[in-house]
Length: 106
Image 1 (cartoon, rainbow, N blue to C red):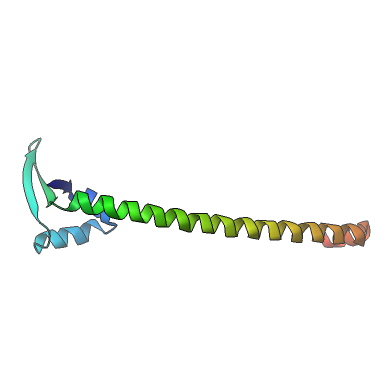
Image 2: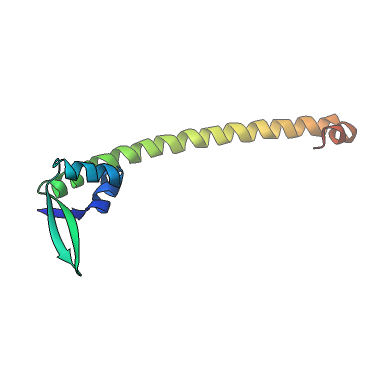
C-alpha cells in the first residue's frame, strides 16, 4: 500500500491539483484522511502505485534515452552543416573585398 498527498499525486501524474480534487470528491480515487499536526490531510491510497510507477519509469527511461541519442545525433549533423555554410559565407565575404564588406556591415 502506498499513500501520497494530493499535490504529490498531481505532480507525479502531471495533472492539476484541481482535477485530482475532482477525482477524490467523485470517489474515483481511494483516499484516507489523517490528522497531522492538528490538520486533516487527505492521502490517496493505491496498492499498485509503486509497482506501476517503477515499470513505466524503466520503459520510459530506455525509450527516452534512445530518443535523446537520436536527437543529439541529428543536432550534431545540423551544427556541422551550419558551420560549413558559415565558413563558405566567410570565404565569400573575404573575396568580395573590404569595400563590399563595409556595405554589408560584416
